[in-house]
Length: 367
Image (cartoon, rainbow, N blue to C red; front, top):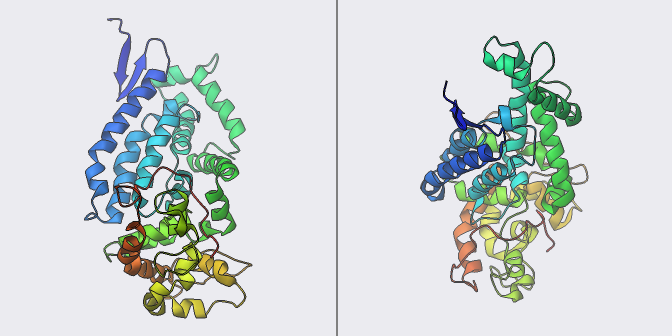
């Protein structure tokens, strides 16, 4: 048999040095090519949001996460692949907001590369040693388990998972990653504080029942608002994209009040007509004494002082529309005029943000 320095088996490259660095670089390169091939589709406003999410979940993610049986259970090892995946997901709200990748993944119910690959390796740890093919010999023997098996078992003991079941491993890993995110991200802290996770089922409801309702722009703005990344005029001014005067002034209604999420949803006079049509009845039914910030959180599907809106994410009864549809309809109907009002003051040639470049802010500001 010829001796070779590298060999590709089922699409995964193995090297004589047994180092995985080259394998990771190759996987990252293939992932980058797949992402570039889909850029035109992802950028086109003619393609519905549901199709873009399907493309991410069913076409791009399998390419990025391929080889998890070998690469999984090491967070540092998949850093590059994780970065590529988060960039893909963040493109969904490009223009509407700059969202922290981990928060947006949680909102959409999409996995991290690390958690998914860890689950793949956990499945392999159960399956491979009992096989009669050569992989059974390589993964474990009667005399001593392989390094691959020992390292996987060691990671599992530290993971917090209750069993090697793939779902248990994935959930435990996701929980650890979210805990780390909360320590560093204000957006994640606000997301948890507002209890937005309890209502993120609206995404699946939208994809199933309203995918072609021509409300994609409103849906993107709602995603960005809940994840703490929406481009408000106040945030754009702080980022230097529009004049600093708009840190304290709303460019839509020209009042000396910053355009925060609460101002946009509750009190901006520029959108009085749209608010009366879509949100007035919802706001009128809210408990008194919440204030603008509290009401804004409820409108976004959160929980404040034990209060939440029943039927926000899914319909409470047959024939009744979920409340989130009123919010995205409001967002959809003000999107174009609001965008023009803010970015006509742009200090850059782009006349608006790319959606990337500055840290995520809180979901609900003052004002």
